[in-house]
Structure formats: structure tokens, C-alpha cells
Image (cartoon, rainbow, N blue to C red; front, side, top):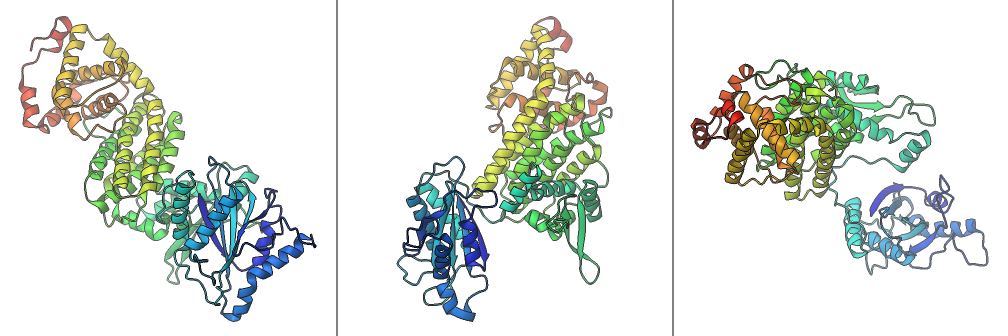
Length: 591
């Protein structure tokens, strides 16, 4: 149940609209379902001797404005309180009596008409559709004083949450005032009329967010906004310094033929120019694309950028599990930029789901926990590297590293959901889980081909070699209390990855322990897939197994680094005698 509150100055004009046909003939059978005393005249169903609805409407308007006129000059200019209340499309239709209860509870909650107060404000509730009502009240009490209306929107929201529970309606998440401004009804109707899939406000919000992803300077940000095809104008102080900006869509004009401008702060709270400057200052990025980790130099720029981003995103997931709230809040902002960068440069097969994940996670980047002067340079540099490298082709190494990165981002968004849930941020936690769901769909699309190739490679291994790696998996996973559940396809893919890692000079057991120890695996939908991508990233294996064969000489340094980072237990495992690959190709292993 969603309340929307406005203030106005014309009681009669609003009543004319509520009892009229509506802008699109959507007002069907408008009638009163409640009023301040239960006896207010109803222009929709008048049974008086004079059936003219205009006369009845004038009587109703005069009755509502009586105290406003009595108050004279002390009455506020904006004396009309207007609240529309709408149920969810999946909710049952409420009866008139139930809507009357809803209206009475809301005017009581916001202090317009407290329970048992004979001097409460006058109000009416008009219903002209199954799913919503309009409450109109005049904000002058019977004692000609103004009601105390502080935080009326928050109070109405809280009361709606209680009404949902009492009337068995869909329970929405409580808000905290950090959400972006939703499109108005007029904006939605205009979008439908002009054939737009979404309102200009939503289109502009996403375009500005994507322009900000990884931008190094304010000038670069505005350049990207213009390159995205948006109209931009800045607001300047008398000194000539920019103090704000407005954006508009080409072709979006008002009734006077003028562009419809939106200030950045009206797109989202964190898209105002001061907030953007703060982000650019706190997360200053390098001017060039970050290099990929490891020694491989034959991968494309998009693949290198995605590999680097996967490593940085993994570290962000670890930081989200710590108790540093301001640092975690900053990480969420950086992850949001990374998602925006991936969405705008992703392969065509995954672009829709990744864009949906970025839009959903945008809500998770804002809460009342302030990201004060926190370092987000790594995440912003990763986002910049992805944008600079350009779009992936959707095949080969580029497409495979997309799956590698998205697999990591799933765990990051789930860590964000846990962080928000622990602090009571229900809307942000829900948005994080929505983003994770979209990312999982994108991952399945991106990983389909690489996983199929790995499965074929795993099945092609000689049986003795397969049994050796399967035994290694059972030993390490049981010691680490990790339960791998999945189809034989994924098991084959994991075995193939271990085999390729050993061909690169790595110790499979050490590498597997390192991958497991990076962070928790309990939230993974498929532990096998997570381990496969961690192993391939750590060992610098091709993300697309069919792209290029492993080269031991290129990654000997990485093998040494991986071993040096493990614990003493892993070092002991590395020193233990193992049969050579040649031995395992021909006969069962001897350990």
C-alpha cells in the first residue's frame, strides 16, 4: 500500500478533478467512502431533491473550506492536504468500509483528525477505482489553529505498513528516505502516450549513473553525459563556479515546447553535483586502464579489465563482512559503479540482465550510514578500466571473463544483502537480493559455453588422472568442510581446471586450498562454479578454456606467488611427493 502526499491551495479544483472523468477516463463511479463526520454531501451519489452534482460539489467544497474562511489571513496558502493511497496490483479489492477504515487511520496517524478530537480537521475520502482512494483535508482545526503535521509522509508510510498487516495485504518494505524520487503519474502517462518504455526521469538517472562510473574528473563526467546524447546545462554562482547541473532528453518537451530539465539531485540523492564531487575526490582513479594480474599478456583489454575487476570485487566482499560501517558503505557505492560499468560494456547476451542488476543495486548503494572519506579508488579504477577497454565481444576470452566477474559479483551482492539486513535496511537488502538474482541469470548465460568446453575436457582426461584429481577434491573439501553439490558436468569442469593448473606448474592441492580460503562459500548457488572461476583467476588460466592452451613458462612466477601466500599446511602439501602428470596418464597414482 503506497501513500503519495501533496499540498495545494484549491479545494474546489481538486474536487472537480476527483469527481470528473480523469485525464484518461479512468475515474469510474467516483463516490465518498468516508468523511470527517460521516454526513458530508456526496456529488457522486447524491440523493437530495436537487440532483445536480455541480451544486452538491459546491456544497461539499464550502463545507471543507468553512474553517479556512473563518481563519482568514491566518490560514496557510497551501491549506489542502491531498493523499492518494493505492494497493498493490496483486492485492484483493477492498470494500468501501475497509477504505473508510484506511482513510480514518491515515488522517489520525498524521495528526489531521486525532481519535476523539472534536476539533480535528475536515476531510473526505473519494474512491473512483478499485485499487485506490484520494483523501482531501483542509489543514485548519475547529479551534482555528493549524495541526502539527511534522513528518506526515513518514507517519503515513508507517501506518500503511501496519494496515497491510491488519488487512492481509502485500507487505512492502519500510522506507528510510534515501530512495530516488519516483516518477509522477503525469510522467508515466506521458511516457505511455509518447511510446517510451520508461519515463525520462528513469532514463536520465541510468544514463547519468553510467557516465559517472569510473570517471576521473568532473570534466570527464560531463563529457560522458554529453556523449550519451543528453542535454546538459550547469548552474553557476556569481563567481562563475558551477554549483549544480540539469539534464534533459532530446525531444522531451513541455506544453510550451521547452526542454524538460531535471536537476541531478531530483534523479537520485547521490547524483547532485556536491555528492558527485565528493565521490570523485574520495575515489580518485588512475588515468589509464588497470593491468590484469599475473603474467599473461596475450589477452584482450576487455578480458584483462574484467580479471582485474574480479580480484577487486572479491576483496570488497570480504570488507562487507567486517564491522567498519562507513568503509562498507563506501564499498557499496564502488560496487554500484562497477556494476554500471559492466552493464554498459557487457556482451549482448547478458546485457539486459546486467543492466537490470545495476538498476536494482542502485537502491542498495544508499542508506543513512555515511561513507565518510573512505577509499574507493580500487573499485572506481576497476570500473574505469572496464569502460576504457570497451565492450566484450561475447565470445572467447572476453565472454569467459564476463562469467568470471559476474560469478564474483553474485557473492558481493549477497554480502551486501547480509550487511543491510543486519542493520535493518530492508529496502536495500531486498534490492541487493534482486541484483543477485539478475546476476545469476546473466552468469548462466555467460558461462554456458565455457562450462561446456570444460566439461568436455574433463571427460577426455584418462581415467587414472581423473581419479587422482577427484581424490584431491575429496580430501581437501572434506578437510575444509566444503560440500560440493552439482551435476557431473560441473565436477568434470572442476577436474579439468585442476589438470590445466598443474600443467601450468601449479600444485592442485595448494591452489584448491587457497581458492577455498579466500572467503565463505555458503551463499554460493553452486560451489563448483565459484571454485572453478577462483582457480582459473588465481592460476591465470584462460577464462574460456578453448581460447588458448596454458603456457607454463608464462606463469611460473604466478605459481611461485600462489605457493608463497598459502599457510604452512599448504606448504607442506606442496612439498609432499606427487606422481607426475605423465605417470597419471598411464597408471593409477601412488601417494
